[in-house]
Length: 253
Image (cartoon, rainbow, N blue to C red; front, side):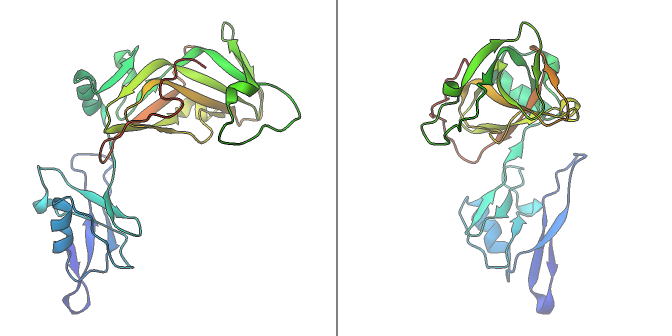
């Protein structure tokens, strides 16, 4: 919905209300346009539009939606891009049924309202102790500075230390789906981080996910195999892509 500004200038639009969703948010932002109709038309034609310097975001009005789907955008300084959408439980299950998401193994109760729980596997990698520096360079490989340890017994992770774990599940995504690895609140509140910075899961992956598990608590933590230690939030991407980097087919630590 647009509102009238000085001298009839339309200066804001209402950012998308997600109907029938308890987390819906309504906000208004100034877009600095005389008329938002050309912008709406350009988005519906999947064109890219450059906004004025005051622009920060906009959305297509409900009455202008294409295929009964609201197009929501954010302004990145040079143009408009549609925001990624988080997949909820019913959509995740439909995508699994269609074969566009594969998680193996998977129990039905691992799928939550808007994420899927993932389980820690039976091995970890422990960084070798030592005072010497580890080089941070393009050809650096964490395996050169760590060793594998089996989780036959819980591993006691000292405060401030980091280990590498791997999900028991193999995750395969279609080329227009991606994800974010996140911790679970019950473990986060005890001081467990399940990734240092690499939360993003690329489109088109087919591998097991490596976790950089850190202890930010003030005391040691016992890490157990088979625990649903993290969750993946799945998103629909704009366009299609396939990750082909060095860890594209990673199956072992």
